[in-house]
Image (cartoon, rainbow, N blue to C red; front, side, top):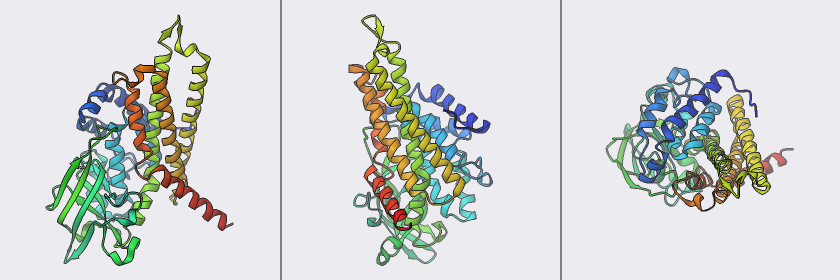
Amino acid sequence: MDYGLTQEQKQIVETSRSIAHEHIKPVRQRYDAEEIFPWDIVKILGDAGLFGVYIPKEYGGRGMGVFELVLVVEELSKVDAGIALCLAGTALGAYPILLGGNDEQKARWLPPLARGEKLAAFALTEAEAGSDATAIQTSADEDGDSYVLNGTKCFITNGGEADIYSVMAVTDKRKGARGISAFVVEKGTPGFEFGKKENKMGIRASSTRELIFNDCRIPKTNLLSREGMGLILALKTFDATRPGVAAQALGIAAGALDEALAYLTTTSANGETLASSQLVQHILADLATEVEAARALLYATSRMIDATGSRTTKESAMTKLYASDVAMKVTSTVVRLFGPRGCLSDYPVEKMMRDAKITQIYEGTNQIQRNEIALALIKEAASK
């Protein structure tokens, strides 16, 4: 479909596609098998200006938005979603600074992220606080001109590799959700260490680690916005970045469909290609329709975010929910279309299926997305 991309947006897509096929595709299987973090790809993406598409020009970016970020993530994820996550995960870590940082903080931390010289990470999840973000226990106690952080975060994308971490911590337990604040903690700060690196089913080229804060002292100037705004910043961040997860899921689904078409149109049985079967054709038609529907929803939501600047909780949740469910359906179906070969690491589709599963889980499980959507619908109905 023609989504009316500008010439600059088309160039972003073409650049992303070229990098994916020339630099990512040759290494994706090895990086997945050996859990290699893609620093060489980071350099290439940074040199191409892709890390900064959503960052304002005054902070070294290209001054565009969520839609352009989505275009990049989709193209990279068609080839390897795990490697694409180095960029998407950095956007997740950067958005609290974009949304809650003052001019000085933005000028300090955003330019190296825009250039891809440093990566960012977002730290909310804890062992006892997954879907319920209000249950976090990591604390930030005021001490003179500093805050002292104590606690442990888990399942942090880009953990250990990123230099800049947006961390949610409790500054006032008495206030519940309103007692959570947001801070930036830099790698190398005394008292900030990295714990277990997770051995994951999918997205294995992406680092997922624990963050450990043990009397970690940071200056008060590292507080984003003001005390008590942490959960609000986190939720606003998810509104802007859940389309990025949807773009990752869409890329996985579209990439798997491309692999299926290439295989089925060149592999023969009984003198005819597998794609000659009407049954197979109908399966492909259904998958292609769902992929395009996911793309239409994703693009519309991303453009809405950029155009309005208002909260898009319902729409972002719908996009993440639908695209990730499509990714899981498409990849599992494509694995079956490949037959026994679909389960072999010689073919990329088994990896795509493993990668797809996480998109249904992180940045809010799809059950949480359904909660968000339903609550918004009920609120809208009550206001009529």
